[in-house]
Length: 96
Image (cartoon, rainbow, N blue to C red):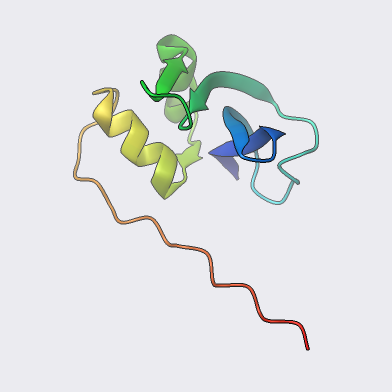
């Protein structure tokens, strides 16, 4: 199954994300089928650059966006629907 998801890049506290199309079972840091955009939540303007035609193509082929990517696509009016609350990561366990 194809997924449209975020892949983290950048340095500590200066991260940015690539929006990639990849197989669901494949690692985010491995090879991506295609890079379809970039997202920088750290900048003041929260830069988001998307290849709208390629995203529409992959969605037509059955690729499923993650909840976070789905919310970004709804903001850009590429897909219709309501936003969903994206799950948060579990807090890290303390080392003893």
